[in-house]
Image (cartoon, rainbow, N blue to C red; front, top):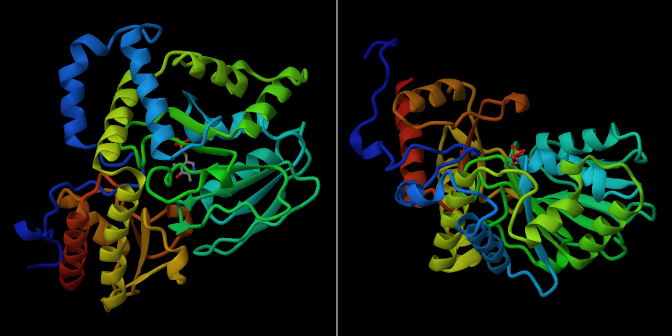
Length: 373
Ligand SMILES: *Cc1c(COP(=O)(O)O)cnc(C)c1O
């Protein structure tokens, strides 16, 4: 084979589904088929009527069941995804000052948005180098502790724990973690995410689980006279969600696929089942990387290594860009590393929709390509 001819993977090195992106991520074909069947009576109908409202109810109930939310916790949703939720938090969750653990692109972007907000005090920022996570500590004037359950850019996960003395609200970006990592709801006040990752749906929606303390904070700030744009006012999202609606028109496809994935996960055993399925995929990819002569897990500490998004460094002689491009040529997509990290790296999503056996095949396919590049 000459250098320029593309490497073609043999049939046994082709996963049953080639989508390994960290978001938008693989949507299960069964969910798309179910949407096709329901389309005639569901798509193109009013979100203020029962056909759609009953789906929103299933979504809210399903999230509460999956996360085992205690009595008094509420599930809200609205348009705009996780980044919009950052702006909503700036508008209607942070009273004066927040603390941020910054250990990658997403956690740093939220902190940057807060730092630019003229009505808030400068945030307290605790950083750690790429491939690790810092820990929160209590600070007297902090009223929101902004944690990230899984830093999708670097593939680092961290446990969600309220340290003694942390009196503010614990507000967790769980965009790529919710539904795939264990969490104890007593340790958070807000756990927010978007459905294009673990929930194998489309983007554009945010969903958040709120503790009673978070509900109280949202209602108090809303009543305080602070000017809040309506789409960023979480009290409006709360009022609409209680009616199984959203402030403005949501994408009905996103809601449908989200509910389908949620109920698929619940019917298979719920959160613990989903967590273990991701752990199985993680064992396959990290186990391979540890044995491999061309690859190593980027995250050194196995406890911090994400079981939902794996980052794998390749040795200098093997170009990750060329490996990803060759995989793409073979229908295996979105294994490219996070650009801004600037490493010779692959990034592979391990979400519940992805078959662990496909992750094993992917690892062997990477070996096959590396030997031939
Ligand atoms: C994907 C992601 C986001 C951004 O989500 P959007 O819905 O695109 O705004 C934020 N935080 C984390 C941790 C993510 O993985």
